[in-house]
Image (tube, rainbow, N blue to C red; front, side):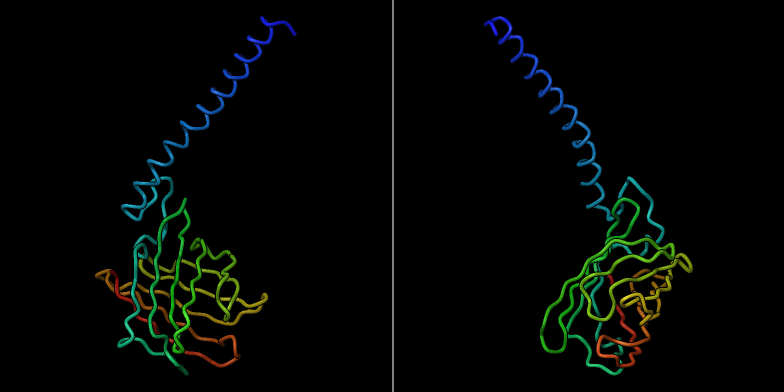
Length: 183
């Protein structure tokens, strides 16, 4: 290869790589700007979320909650955010013995079954929108239904109540009412 051909080859490679980098960077910049807006408002501009009242951070109110057979956790926080048409749920709970667990997953409120890793009681679930402020759910463990319940947001949007009936990981019957306050 002569000097002239080598120079043109290097320029061509640099042009192709520069164009690739530019075409890759520009669309991502737009997405990053939209994502930044979504974080500040809890609503992703790219897709509508069916159950918008759930979006935000909720703290467990132990005084209003009931856990049967118990014991109740020491604390709990749920954070829901929009993520491309789905809802991302992050749960942080400290149990009665002081052990903290964190679980997170994405889901829709269309009745489809999706994985729910991070809990001993269940490994998958199905959530269905009942009204603008209520959702019913079914939770599964190894493909078998173990829990049913619902989520309901108060008329003023400040309280989230989650009712759960079924069995826990130990096979004990549960009947829980967890009340969360919006932060």
